[in-house]
Amino acid sequence: MCNSNFFTEVFSENHNIRYSAKQLEYLEKYTALFLLNLFMGIYQNLDKSSYSNFKTYELSTLKAQVDIKVLPMA
Image 1 (cartoon, one colour):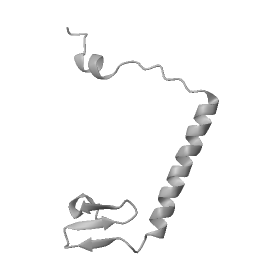
Image 2: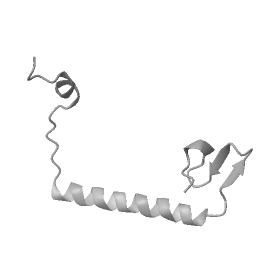
Image 3: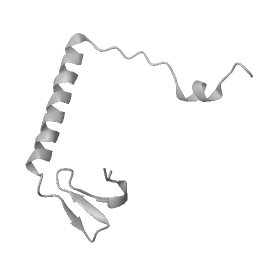
Image 4: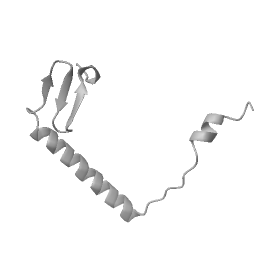
């Protein structure tokens, strides 16, 4: 049992995931478009985010309200 690591045996199975060059090109373009749309949305909504009752902050781009404690202050 000294040489056996139960954690790695359970949670790290070997996966043989192989993508073709065409699939990788598609995934690369899809990711680039997603990030471009996300950052464009952030830029367009720069002044639309707001505080509400000093405990939550509304992120209009993500359409979500987050607790002020989870945002970085620096």
